[in-house]
Length: 238
Image 1 (spheres, rainbow, N blue to C red):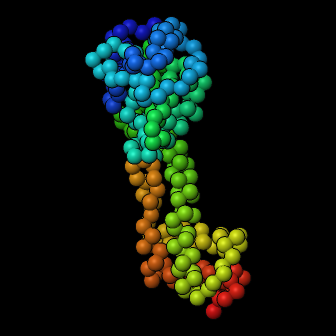
Image 2: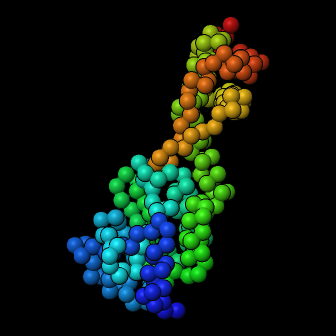
Image 3: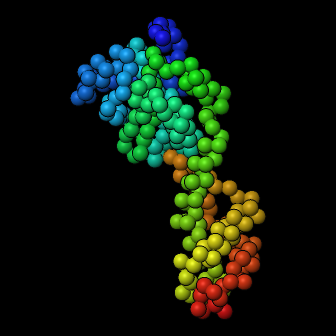
């Protein structure tokens, strides 16, 4: 299938896209252009942001889409999820008609070749203009993973402090499986009772206000959750 220049321009001209070209100053510029302008074949090297330059007024067939770009300081779970889901859907075409692009601060996006992406890919890209998420299930899974990574580092220590204060305990066995299960039980009940949800910030970071776990109502939940077993996890429970 050979697309006309008009068809390529129409694909690249869709919402939230940027036409890109390979930088003439990149060491592999000649090899890349020679490779990509023939029939597409597997590329052996990775692509970085420094390899690319804006070509908004040019005729390059390559483009990026803003619904995929993300880093530690930009984008969020939507863009990260879209990158993951795109690979799930079209992974067999990776490094053939589309490529991951990497940069500093964990930045990534996807570079597409408008000459060779197929009709299903174009439909997926166009649909993002109406709803910017490829898969609700994928973004839910990603946000759950981020929450499960964040809570043990920033939230469970706050609950432990409340347990120590409420029961006047020391030497809690943090390796006790039952105790750790109860920490998560208390966490989920407090979140539900207070009608609180994790906030996923720019960069895809999870945030929950720790003050929620120190309120009178939360302390009552913690007391009720740990009272039956507190003697089993501390030698100094009172």
